[in-house]
Amino acid sequence: MKRFARKGVFPHQLAFTLLFPLRNIFLSPKALVKRLELRDDFQVLEVGSGPGYFSPEIARNVPRGRLVLADIQQEMLDCAKKRLDRRGFTDVEYYLCDGETFRFPDQVFDRIVMVTVIGEVENQDAYLREMHRILKSGGILSISELAGDPDKLSIGEVRRLSETHGFRLDKLYGSEKNYTINFRK
Image (tube, rainbow, N blue to C red):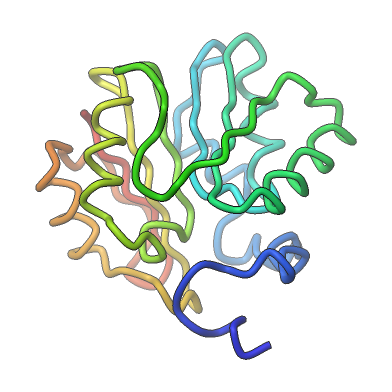
């Protein structure tokens, strides 16, 4: 339980805690999807998906597109797959990443989503370079940070980091406590 409130990668053994509906107080899946401005044919990458709390709602909104869940823990991807399969979303792809590079072609995704992830990433510069490379021109990188996350970055930190890698601020939702920032490529 010590790891539950400490910095670093969230332990897969506690994945069930990420599925509590109480999370809706901070950011609901429907609110996130609304902020993403999805079209039904978009290619979406959810980075650090964990057990897939937001994933079913994203998948529901891209029925002609593609959703790829990426995580550095196979156990999290396995949990997300079970959850999505039970809900009938069997065409989702699962990608085990290494924390620095992504084996995707250049400019393939319309949206890249990270919820309470960027603060856990060891090499944030490498990650954001990769996000910029695989995001389509005009696409959105959406970063959400929530109260209570020990790895949470401030709005200013996320903005400086993202703008350093060629992203420009598009929209900001919420406040310093709980926010989503969408950046355009």
